[in-house]
Image (cartoon, rainbow, N blue to C red; front, side, top):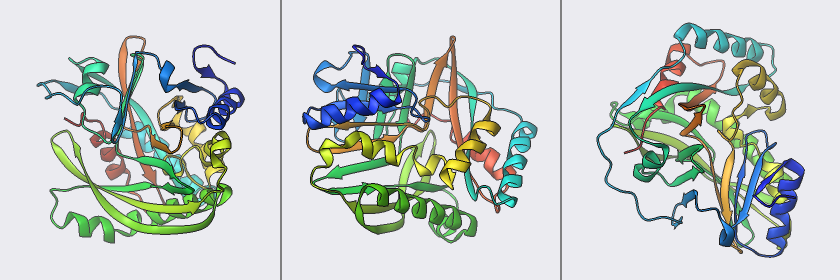
Length: 326
């Protein structure tokens, strides 16, 4: 057990389940590998944790953003190409079909993590104890009544490009990638629910990425839970994580390849954070993520690789995802 909110995998999911059984509101964070879990009741939440999940927040509204600098120092195209080729070989060998490849990029800025957080515009945001922030556009799951819904996000294009929406929706590589993730999430929801249904397939969201506007492609998949799901929240979250959109398919084998190829610890990047309010649950995938390590800031980003991917385009996408959403 923990008096500070920190738990290992077994203790964390047990605490989540216990609070759910009590119908007590809480905030939770799951690291990508689920080996570190943070759980605190909302009425005991540490003051240095700020969150926003759409209409739920514990701070005042975003402020007018200042002018600021953002300098990126990404890995070289050659370094990226080396990792990319390893993944393509794994795909050719049939060990994975889609893998989300990520890297951490040193950045410099004249803003603090908390200042970036306060100015960032995003549906889902988290500031955690001066250690990291995320401003994510991607829901993970939400549960209302006995209905659970997942919202996998795969596919990004600049909105300014001619016929951008038609381009992204007709692109064979992007379509295949999205279909694989939807299929994975359908299977995942089948572990915890029944009556699985794809309610919306490949719809478009607009998000602001610094000075650029992006179109991102998502789907909505639903299932029905048993009426006593609030007594089993730990099991539900453990069964569905890590998110399919930031791992790949098949999930277990793809995660083994990710661990070897990426050569760094994702930590809470691509993990999950969310809130159970005593009745319903909402959560998000921790992408668009900046972390402080030994006095330096690192922005973690990446994208999905399939057999039809282009290494130059994927490398550029990794860099383009390093932005402040002001």
